[in-house]
Image 1: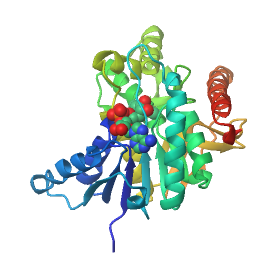
Image 2: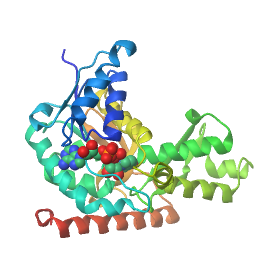
Image 3: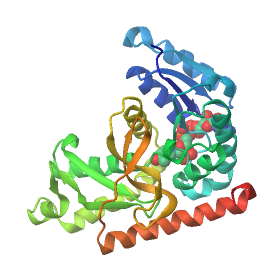
Amino acid sequence: MARPKIALIGAGQIGGTLAHLAAMKELGDVVLFDISEGTPQGKALDLAESGPAEGFDAAISGTQDYSDIAGADVCIVTAGVPRKPGMSRDDLLGINLKVMKSVGEGIRDHAPNAFVICITNPLDAMVWALREFSGLPHEKVCGMAGVLDSARFRHFLSLEFDVSMRDVTAFVLGGHGDTMVPLSRYSTVGGVPLPDLVKMGWTTQEKLDAIIQRTRDGGAEIVGLLKTGSAFYAPATAGIEMAEAYLKDQKRLLPCAAYVDGAFGLNGFYVGVPTIIGKGGVERVVNIQLDKTEQAMFDKSVDAVKGLVEACKGIEPALA
Ligand code: A3D
């Protein structure tokens, strides 16, 4: 039986790390695609040469030709530009929208049966645009953000409580931007919700609020430190978690930017929600109950994404 084929559109910081992780985990053969001549080929060769020591069986190649992604089972899209210090994710809209057009058409023409995970920012608007340009079924196109934002939240919480990150679960919903919604009530240590841990004296509400804010600013904190680009190790790890859930039909419950039609008061809109990912792609949107405050934060976040989608329609008339 042939190994699955994983196409990585964009061979930059995240793309290269995705290729490394996919090979190490033997998820399938990897094709790196990028418009930058030599970059995907160079990274592919370098990664392939790490195979003998690591002992993985995966073919890794690089290309500038979309026909080489033919038949891909999974496409992970990081093509575009990342932010620099002082930039918001939204500042990337115009340039990355053009990139989504060429990528969406490439996937439509060569890998129409793939499960597509978008990582390019501004995430929620770009996954919407990528779906429009590719024309793939909505359940086969989603965006990675919630897994990363939740991982950041889990990491900060584990530091605060001095417990293993493995025992911290967390939910971050909404758009992947300043309005994202970390949900304390649905975040736990070993099943104990955060509000209970505040009552038990494990932390204070003030400290929890500061952690929530640090989570919202998690991407900017790394951009500020790196100065030349944005985070890539944790974003790649999160993307691979989603790809693995699809390829192995794991039915994982993961927050991701999914097409929501009927849940959360939304009718046909891409935003971060809890989903089940398995062999059908985004198989279910999990319609958890939000209290009034949470719903208000979620609605505000949805409005922010709506603004970006409208801006896309203004730039690219074909989308309107
Ligand atoms: P970078 O290292 O610059 O890689 C981007 C790659 O895209 C470069 O190699 C470019 O040559 C390539 N590229 C540009 N245009 C095209 C095109 N038309 N077709 C194919 N390839 C193209 O960036 P990165 O890997 O650090 O980040 C990639 C994207 O992910 C950026 O938009 C980031 O903002 C975004 N990002 C998202 C998250 C989320 O949580 C959603 C986190 C971190 C970064």
